[in-house]
Length: 429
Image (cartoon, rainbow, N blue to C red; front, side, top):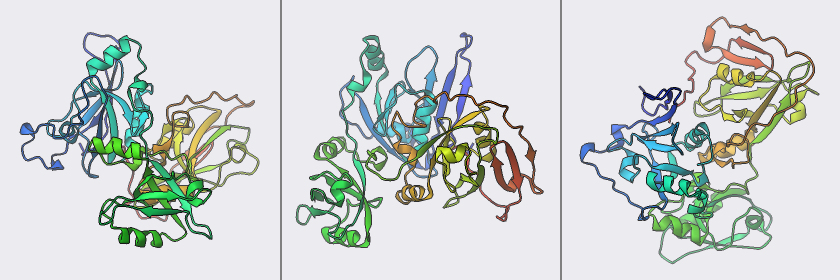
């Protein structure tokens, strides 16, 4: 089995009729560098006492895995860490069998269903910040009716801000200890571009345009700032947030950032099918670095798609509240057709898509609990009058290697001018 493959398995526990166990497997890859995994002990500890949440930042290579399974166990509670691979990344960081997952990248997840938590981990890519509680403490807290969210710090997220220069500059200045690399504190001019972009005065600069500044001297940072041109993206943290991570020996991850100040956001489109269908085409195409995406085209004037705010070139991120990351064209179409007369799409425009790609981040990372595809329930939409259109499939002359195009009530597979060796995206960490 390929390294990093996610397995979502439904099984029946012995002796319990109808029992279900949902498992997400993060497989151990020996390339992690342990010569003798059997002798490995947890090398990093956070210092939290028993009964308190523990925080782990797991960073892996693109061909590696996190080295644990995440279970949803019928008759049990919470998202349970199981099968921690001996010598694997998770085990070396201190994750233990039976731990309950409370947070992913600073977002509380105990109340979310299993698949939503999986989606959050998948969206995180090669680095994820986890907060867990040991199993005994979790069960004791549940028995007492405690709010588990109250066990976690109120807000220890950094802030991601996009600043556009005006005629007076970016509206901030940088200071730091002389002769010390990587320590840059920002003073922000009230009402200036940085202030309007959400940069708090007195915050510490962690990243510039997706790159860490930890190893930069003041002269190097000054050059990078000048090279940014008319706009730049800053990852910043308050003193309290910086201290929280520093005391635990953790880097502050951009994946855990508060991105509410960013002008680039995904959009949710609610559509009810009319007699003429939804009025758009879904096309599969490359969107950089060999990745394959599902794009919206040929939006018909006056129909449901246009009324919902669909724009040509939008990329689909989720259908009916579920991420389509790793799904192929036909699987995406089936999800769009899951309900005969309505659909909810989460989409992102090309400029916003390019912004997140330039930072190496998924836009799905920054959906809050009330946002689409983040764990909220898909709304019930009214049914239109009339019958939905029939669906048909026309297969192109060269089969599944062809360009894929789907209309709202039909799927057409036609020949693509692209080469035969196009890559298909599969579910994998």
